[in-house]
Amino acid sequence: MKQGKIIIISAPSGCGKSTIINEIMNRGNVDLRFSVSATNRPPRDGEKDGVNYHFLSDEQFRQAIADDDFVEYEEVYPGRFYGTLKRELIERTAAGINVLLDIDVKGGVRVKELYPELSRSIFIMPPSIDELRRRLEHRATDSKDQIEQRVGKAEFELSFAPRYDVSIVNDDLSRAVDQTENEILQFISR
Image (cartoon, rainbow, N blue to C red):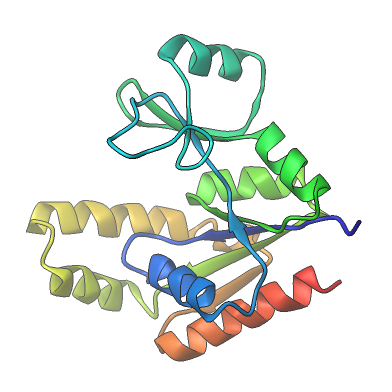
């Protein structure tokens, strides 16, 4: 059986990462499955353990951190954790499944460091910080202060781009989708 691969896609908020990923998944040209993240938040109505998330208690999540069971994890809000379990990646790739990780930039760097041969890391870039600010303003979902916080965070996150295998500038959505899909197809066909 062929070993599955890990595809890491990261980007600052507002760069179109989710749109690019959704378009690639909808096209159906790439055999990819999303990684199932772990969280210590309670399941919402209709969510299933092992499908939507691996739901862990606070104690289980903290024990998994202590046991080094995570490839990466983040305390997104005080006391609210999300992370990628090592066993999730190991079991899936061993079964020949190509796994897609849609994670923050620090987590992406960490996964690449742990699985350098098995993974391809792709960083989605905005054409410029000014364009990113314009996109966030156009979304009209955040206050001016929130937009400035996101732009400040994006400037920090952009400093991680050189640590990724490839950076793709999303200045034309169709082209960015094609470039990202081609990167993935080339890597998983090796």
